[in-house]
Image (cartoon, rainbow, N blue to C red; front, side, top):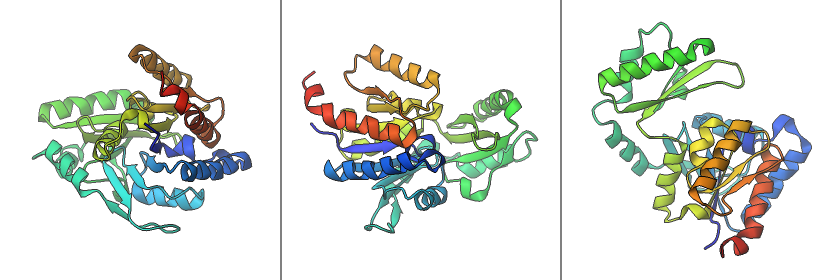
Length: 275
């Protein structure tokens, strides 16, 4: 059994920090490792697809085979070769999410929360058929999240909340997603369709919204710039689960940390396969 795919978050993970030349060099080395080992590349991000494309161009990221974006509510497959790939939405996944939300689609949520003073609907390009996103004041994020959760329960809506603070501008963010859907949920769905086992997938991340995927049984890479509590949480879950060689905490930041972990797993795989 060999590693078949690298799934990675973008911001704070694959994207080089501050245009650091060393991390730019690490990005090119990651491309070489992917090619050498014939690994699929997945971007797994909270960004919307247009923002992913912008990041790919701005940071000269390698062309992914798949993009999982909108916090796990959209999956796209690259259909054409480099340098400008054409991506197509995975309709089967969209159909799957439609069954989850049933007769409570996104526009019903928008109508119910439109008049809520504490919420401001995000830009249209940040919305999706299965993702409704709002801004709120960061200082009241906890209380607003609780209020939204209460409303969802009253509606019996098959939707859940992911709340966070935008690291770039400090805005409070509230995303409503079909219940149970996350980055990890989408990767699991993809892996099942590809007939891959968790051990065959390497997942790299840095933040709290990566935790579910980092503890889903994949071979995890936590980069050096990740918050201490993220690394500690992931390490504890892996230890409690009895997984062998599925957690790598790099001391290197972002892109360099991804390369560090990827080399670790590629080099030790023959030995770890015997554990």
